[in-house]
Length: 399
Ligand SMILES: Cc1cc2nc3c(=O)[nH]c(=O)nc-3n(C[C@H](O)[C@H](O)[C@H](O)COP(=O)(O)OP(=O)(O)OC[C@H]3O[C@@H](n4cnc5c(N)ncnc54)[C@H](O)[C@@H]3O)c2cc1C
View (cartoon, rainbow, N blue to C red):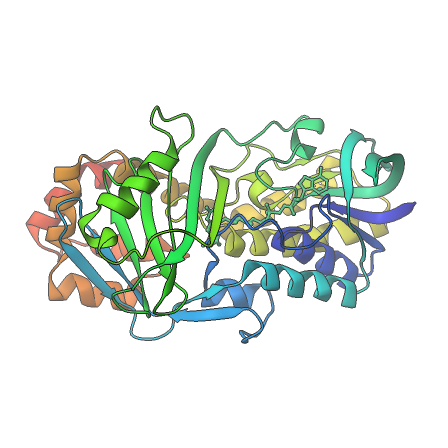
């Protein structure tokens, strides 16, 4: 088997990269180790309206389960900061159906898909890449001009290509469970001790079922399941709404902070595998789609020109850095700042934000894909001294 471009991993990012490579004239093969696209799911499925549009899909009942307009953000002391976006800002989706739509779009653009095919070895060169795969128990070799590693947080194409792995990974856990949500249009976020170092969430699918989960830094002494049990059964707000039991359990890693290099001879790494994830939310579909489109296009042009050198493929790295590099960098600083606050400091921060002026500003400038826009507004000298005081350390770090 010989292709211009082989994409390893048929998640949303791999399917998008395959589609864009095919749309730009390349012969494309998309490999997926599982027998089925979109399963198992390792996601809450909360996608901003921008993320869905970046993937080139019109929101539809095929995959949208609920529209989300805002968030209730809870302090460790139980007080609530209500953020109302005023209109639909995000969708709670079925990732299974969403991923399948994207894979179908890749095939419609001309890409071939092989399921139950796992990439297990890689030999790279300036013009030909040899990918060793295990297909239904048989070893085979596939050749390509360019290999795109879209194999997720546990992927190993980047390691095989000498690009290493993402350094920081959060451990995420979530159940889909009976839950009487306060308002179906709003997600709930819990900062501080319910999930130290990140946050916990509830995402309503309807007024009876929500996805309830959290993430903490991997390697934390207390396992994530203990925090989840405590959230479900002891958190005063959640426990009185939680109906008991669960319909689905999701466990997965969330990579934070991009790889230093995402390109080598004949290879590009994209999506979770490259750490292209928003550090403030753990969401990787929007950022992954932005990068996948660039990767697919560059791979097709490079294959067509017969030049898969790292110098040619570097175009991908330059372009994705231009689109997202600064935002991911600021996002990482926000993540580290908020994640390092003590409970009393989180209480103080959220209390100081609970003013009509700040809440209006969030409605106007809040953007789950681009938190830097709001942060810049927040730090403007026209805001209250108290606000600036709370943000003093953060301002010193970011500016
Ligand atoms: C608990 C949790 C909640 C999350 N919630 C959200 C959210 O609400 N919104 C959001 O935007 N993001 C969320 N994310 C992150 C999101 O799931 C990822 O960013 C997104 O799935 C990344 O897409 P991807 O295509 O890069 O990787 P993946 O979706 O992981 O796809 C990688 C694919 O590669 C395949 N693969 C791996 N190795 C090989 C191999 N050797 N050969 C062949 N195939 C291989 C895998 O089977 C998989 O199908 C969440 C993550 C977790 C863990």
